[in-house]
Length: 171
Picture: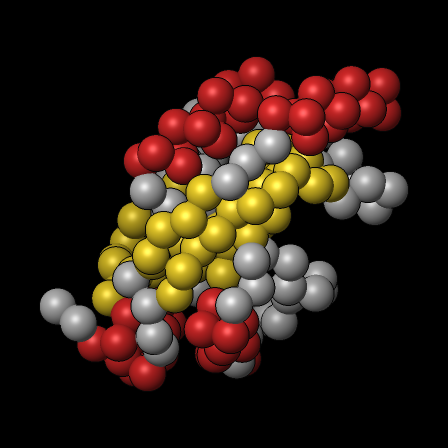
């Protein structure tokens, strides 16, 4: 089964992201707006039970953090993804790094750029037009994040929460 680890922002930020995603992101119906902490990885039932236990330790040793989405950016020319850039605060970076150990699947092939995707799989012309208009609209949002989620992928390609982990061991 395929698993991943992500943070879901508040409803307010999800609503803003979805106002763009419903038009520009073909994955809109598969997963809510999120900040990926661990790229999708395969695990058996036995492996995921061990991973879930280790995630409790990771969460206990991690601190809540401020998620600040402060501008619209793009990964072009690598790919035509447009996203809300998220401030790379030390607590978020430390959490990300603690999830990159081998037990949680392979290390990401990408460097960590905290973001929430709002558009993807656009043609070059679409990307140029959409990126230009979204950059003018901008984003300025701040909230405290105190949890992350282990997700699994259903047969129809959508993602759902397997387990939620509170940061800092708070209940």
